[in-house]
Image (cartoon, rainbow, N blue to C red; front, top):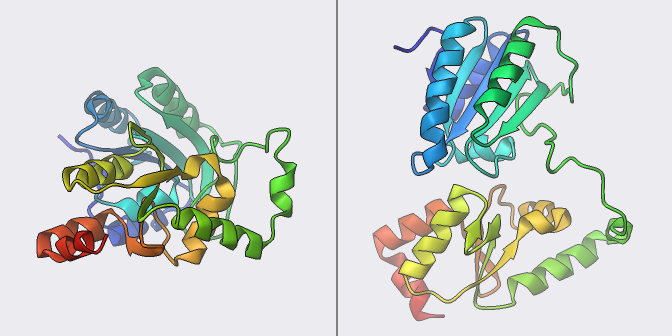
Length: 249
């Protein structure tokens, strides 16, 4: 039975409302997907933690259905767990690490946190332990790339073939469910495509969002222009529009 502090989030609006109700409260965001077997076990762990720690706000978020929330917290795989106090990031736990998650919740449920980051903005994209690391030696030259040079490089990548998917991971090893679904659908539609792994290049990852005015990934590029993301792909197939797109490839 669900407890009063446990919520299955159904919309972005509900998420914001719950998060902003008490900015002093510790929150546990549990990102999951029905196709990921490890999530089944961890969903039960999360429910037990909610029962044990009634002072913690526990939000269960199906990552693919609520992609805006998942993207804002830079969720690249499921299960992923984010602990917050207000707008302050306390801890990230990735994978089926029941012990690590339990320890983290027990720690922050009863202590004043030593924050990893803090922001005055509404809950959005906190720094991550993966993407927030310092640049490795030898990457300094990328910092000198101008916006014009980056845009030119991205345009080149967008035109490397008739269909290019900017995704997380590679086709045979996607790093998120959205990318996995996109690859599967394009293969099912017998579309030839190339890909670019945005996790290997942070400049391209952020630059593509701005260049195409499209905040999420994967981004499907057709003939050098943005076609859309996973939702647009699904919708265009359902309406029959995608058949016309294929015919022009």
